[in-house]
Amino acid sequence: MATSKEWQKMLNGELYWVWDEDLQANRERCKLACQRFNEAGQISRRRRFEETDPVVDPPISVDHGLNFKVAPGAFLNFNLLVLDTCLVTVGARTLFGPNVCIYSATHPMDPAVRQGLKGPEAGKEVHIEDDVWIGGSVIILGGVTVGRGSTVGAGSVVTKDVPPFHFVAGNPARVIRRIDSSMDPEQQTK
Image (cartoon, helix red, strand yellow):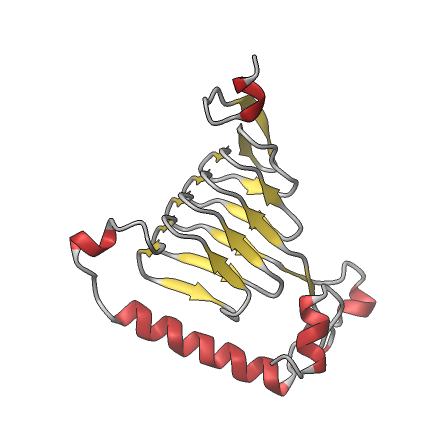
């Protein structure tokens, strides 16, 4: 994939041709990998609670897979959908509720450029830092960073960065309050 011109444009957040042969082959590879994972059955209870790897409760659906990085100790609940056109990172000890969607893919706003299925696509990275809790049915859009120790309320649509150690909720998500935590460096100095 590193040699594909469209793959490089996609990773750079530039407009790229979605129907590129290499990109389609990678999507198919990832789709089959997700299908095998989803059909593999449950892992042992002991294995589920080891913090050396992320825990993923199937089913999961990921677009490319190569751009989706999950840190140890994260828990990804069932029905996760990730469009990883650009890099999507999930930090350590982060918890996802069910039905979370992460969309790093975007389309041009101008319909003359967008052209339905004939036009280009682009993307923006998504970063979810350590110790975050993402509630059920949350949607996170491209270009967003969810700061360390934050909580995103169930059903929220995150369109802007979430500051570390804050609770956000709503559509679009807005800051509700700061979270009191001994993990917050700013609160440790007070």
